[in-house]
Length: 113
Length: 109
Image (tube, rainbow over all chains, first blue to last red; front, side, top):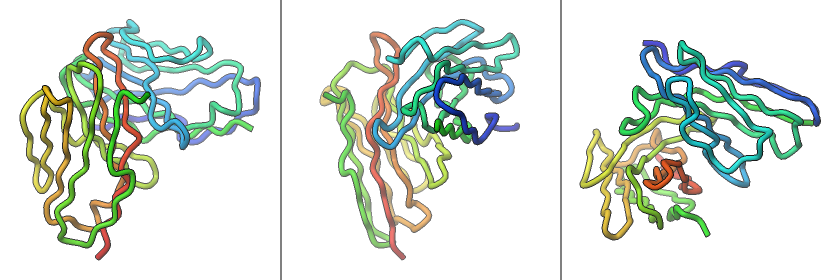
């Protein structure tokens, strides 16, 4: 089975722009969650999707949004980028919403200049 | 206040040593995860615990629900165990994840 894939792997944007990151889960997995990792704040939970519905959300501003498609692929969008949005963005997939260890993707490293 | 506290933050060990990393949390949880992150960013989920103890190879994870505490043990440590180990809990009430700040382990040959 192929693992979780994330595209792009690296991205450079400027302040004020918007960005869309993509995550393809392991085949058969229906839950996708997103995380932000920065040196200062560590890992933080962004949101979680299951069957195309957002089930949980972390404490991030509305500039951060996401969606999940019928094939379980997920995208997250960040609008009006700020310097502090520079981070490694990780997604993880699991078969069910709870009760299973997630499989993480390699991450997308976003740099905002 | 952090919902999840890990200790130690940094740990240096000699190859072959027994290692313990601790995690304490303050919220009611439905599950606790131990994650391993190697340089370059890749994260691997090592264990998911809701009670008791789990073992996988040289790794052992335990959890005490009453004391809100979990430990990750590595027996016969090896340089390839060098990584950051992160404790994560899923908060029962709102089903959200909270993460510890991580323990950076360096095992010297």
